[in-house]
Every structure is written in C-alpha cells, then in structure tokens.
Length: 96
Image 1 (cartoon, one colour):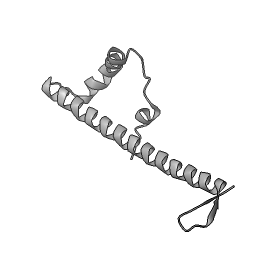
Image 2 (cartoon, helix red, strand yellow):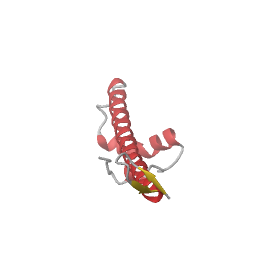
Image 3 (cartoon, rainbow, N blue to C red):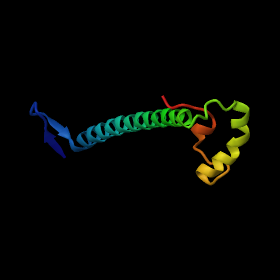
C-alpha cells in the first residue's frame, strides 16, 4: 500500500509506520532522560533538606563515630527495615 508524501511521491505504509515508531522511541528516550534528571534533582533536594534538618536540630556537632553506631537504629526507625535501599543508593552511585 502506498500513500503520497508532500512531494507527491508514493511512500510505503511500512515506511510510515517505521518512521512513527522511531519518532516514538525518540520521544520515550527523551522522557526517560527527563525523568532521570527529575529523580536526581529530587534526591539532591532531599539530601540538602536532611542536612539542614540535622543542623537545625543541632546534631551536626555529633561525631561520625556516634552517627555510625546509631545508624542501624536510625535506619530501622525511619524505614522499619535493616537495609532496603535502591542499589544505586547502596553502592554510592549517582545518576548523571
């Protein structure tokens, strides 16, 4: 089956569909990149807010040794779990 394009030449229906599929793939890729950036910015915002909260509660003076000792209990208190975070958080990876 052929249709006419702007030049008046015939274009196969399969070519039209292939072009549309490629356009949708490009759109999906762009949306995935936007979502990844959104999640990165949300994480960054959350990290800043947590740091601010720690300062406001005057807990920033507490030594890292005490934080490390308390962290398992803090984690359970906040999440109800031992350690169940996304792999990217556990490995210290950052999305770019």
